[in-house]
Image 1 (cartoon, rainbow, N blue to C red):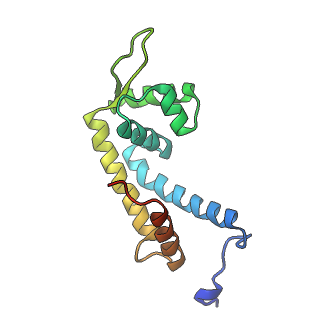
Image 2 (cartoon, one colour):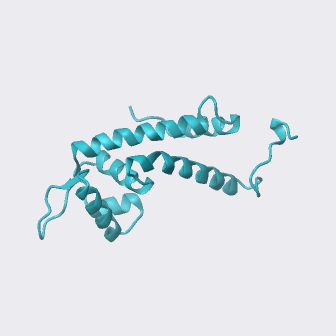
Length: 147
């Protein structure tokens, strides 16, 4: 039986990239499971976060922030709008769009951020693996809150 100092890690555990990819997959799976009951994906959560953080954002700015095509952003935003989560307040031919969060979108974003907090606590909180706790502390130290 391996002690804590000899715990088996992912194949290629001497590679930082492999270790981080393995941890990223764990985070993605846990977050996807928490978001599913809310009817959200990680990508849609990201879009809602950007729209909330930059009220009146354009489709092209959203695409740049999200690292996806403008066409993909249009598709996703249309779905979010159909669900009543966002609105395009200037959707008319020839004018730039400005996408805004609705009250329902803000409510869903708050619920989603509670789900994110649960995943953070599970994977990086006091009951998590000590190495993952250390990773969480390090990452939080690198990106202090914007108060």
